[in-house]
Amino acid sequence: MSYSPLELVIQSAQGLKYVNHVKKMKPYAVVFIRDHNNVLHSSERKTSVDLEGGSNPTWNFNVKFTINLAIAQENHLDLVIKLKSRRKSHGIRDKDIGEVRVLISELLKCFGDDAAEDEKHMSKSVVTSDGEAQGALAFSYKFGRTVDHPPTDPNVKQRPKRGANGFAGQFFEGLGNGLSSGLMDAVTEVGKAILDDDDDQPDDDEEDEYS
Image 1 (cartoon, rainbow, N blue to C red):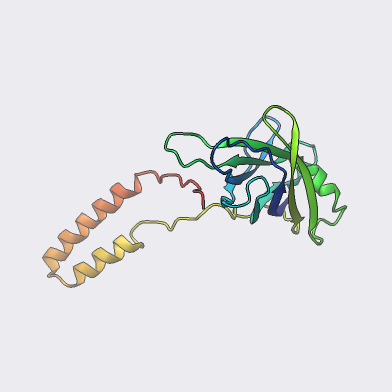
Image 2: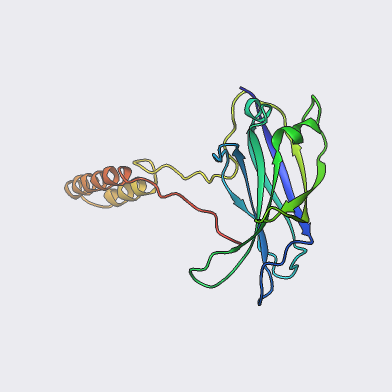
């Protein structure tokens, strides 16, 4: 299979539907890749919250995804940008403003056979929850060189491996060096037991937070 990086800059929006009735609207965008069965093909990335722009927010948010070209060229993948208004009240969901959906195949067509060209600029209508078009979203994008194997997802943080060669192992090794041989053996055994138990615990998933 062939894969290509898709680099985006979510720039700004104009004329968004004003969904707040009392307080000033504080828009942000959630960006991801999804297929026509609503299955995610990327992590979800959030822009910062624009506290001042109201219906005309600016973000200039950079994000990068890896695209499976075979699936994209069958018109099965969408770039989705959901626009929301941040609410600080505990337990109250942020308000939906609208969303933009663009076929990845449409983005690819703008580049022809050689996807690795200069970036393109696009403006798309924002569709509200009642199906009406109100406002427009501006973004730029470009594709990188095609590769045969998917690179590491740039949006996923890699955790260092834990074990005998990690920090805990070094701690017990250093502690043992300062003790007598009998105590050193005991400390080493305790250290191995702790490390073995720790390796059995699953890592918690990390979630993106608002800026």
